[in-house]
Amino acid sequence: MQQEMPNTQDEGQRPIQTNSTLVVEEGVNLRPYNSFGLPATAQRLVRIRQESDLRRVIDHPELGRAPKFVLGGGSNIVLTRDVEALVLKMEIMGKRVVEEREDAWILEVGAGETWHEVVRWSLEQGCPGLENLALIPGTAGAAPVQNIGAYGVEAKDRIEAVEVIDLITGRLVRLPASVLAFGYRDSVFKQTGFGGLAGKSVITRVLLRCPKPWIPQLGYLDLERKMLETGITVPSARQIFDWVCQIRQAKLPDPRQIGNAGSFFKNPVVSEEQCRDIIGRDPGIVHYPMPDGTVKLAAGWLIDACGWKGKSVGGAAVYERQALVLVNRGEARGAEVVTLARAIQESVYGRFGIRLEPEPVIV
Ligand code: EPU
Image (tube, rainbow, N blue to C red; front, side, top):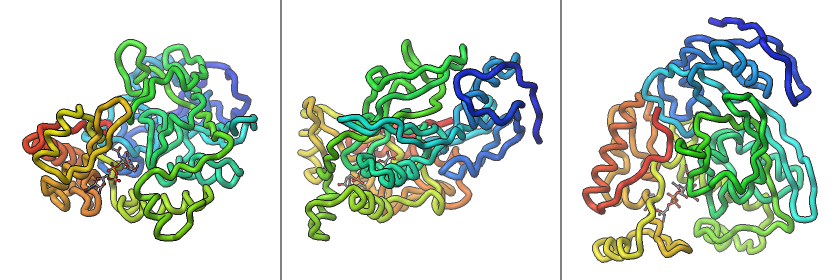
């Protein structure tokens, strides 16, 4: 069912405008819009295809005040119930190389672009630098929110700035990376307290920086293995892209075939002392010393060590090839995913005294 709302305001900064009405879809099935494939319905959903769509929502007498839920590729959410808030489905497209500087290429991409397509396209444009982030599910607009990362590179290493629209004022602001408070799978967009932007603004475009000269990032064990296997010691960016795709395909389920949200928990960070204590009991634990003296533990290893691979609750299961990934075996409901996740947290806490923190947002 669709309901048309009158346009209440003239356009702002972007020239492209094709649609003069605001279309509100009602009772939208969200299963195709979340990578876990969980059942849930959005009471009301608006597709945001350009900045002006968002302004129309903000300026609307009723919708402007309604609580809002921003949906990108739906690859980092666990839907446990229907969504009452107005769903803003981000579909702003566009990819262009906006600047070539001495020290970098600057790319601008719409929040609704598929992240992997952005990576592939950037290489085709002759702008290497994003290849280690190939095949990460989700949209470009979601990349800064959780500071996606893989194989030694994080989004924060490649983000120059983001454009956001303030959900109260409708103003478009360009925020440089320096104010985005990036951390491990964290940013200002996830923070709710003072200065946090969660629920306050929506990312519309992302400016990416591919540094010059290009320096391949090959320090990750899985990539070192690929170099040894193939004998290629000076890989091109395209070669690294292909390797990353192969590595991910070998151990991570394709959300188009098996519903999942990538890593379900963050890798926990502990003190050196805590780590020594755990190593004393479990010498095999996979851990990575961090520059600040703390130690990051492989959550997948901890879960695996507790015997969770292949275990399930209803339709929700622990992936056989990577214990950090929870999957939808078919008809899983969000509540089953959450029950399974809690049971894993309890068992890891019971054995190692470590609290695992979920990575996706539980709705
Ligand atoms: N391990 C096990 N058993 C398992 C899973 C992992 O023993 O069931 C061990 C592995 O053998 C390896 C170590 O744990 O020695 C780490 O595993 P892996 O290399 O697969 O990486 P990860 O730490 O589990 C992180 C990111 C991934 C990212 C990879 C590669 C987080 C939460 N996850 O996973 O990101 O692709 O490194 O950089 O930081 C995501 O965030 O959704 C995601 C997939």
